[in-house]
Length: 138
Image (cartoon, rainbow, N blue to C red; front, top):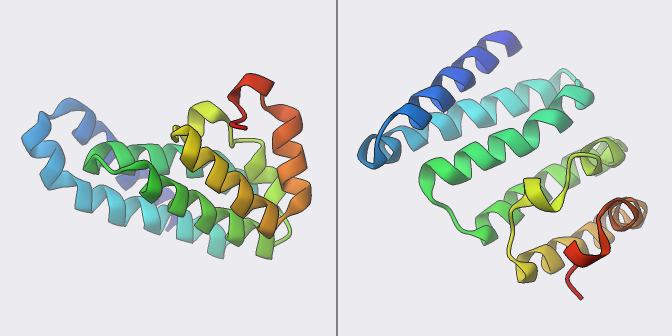
């Protein structure tokens, strides 16, 4: 099933990239559904390594397809931080949480870092060590 969700997500992602604004808006629901199902299937199968790689890609594609704001993106990121924290695998996800993959405003990045601290102080330290100092909002 996981392979089929990945295939469906790739097709939806390609479709949105090739179509104009009007069609992009009409396809965002399918991308949301398929992207969420793909990530859920990886979580259910406990494939956290693969899941950590795909979370940024799926969030970015869903955000782009529906022109969503940074609050939506922060909420999605925090959902996955909590999933990984519950599985004691948050460090896997943190490796893929870069300022570029987050694509959040300074205010939203700061809010995410506060939420990350609440979920996993060690993960926050890993982020702070990995990110360039100038990308950390103070």
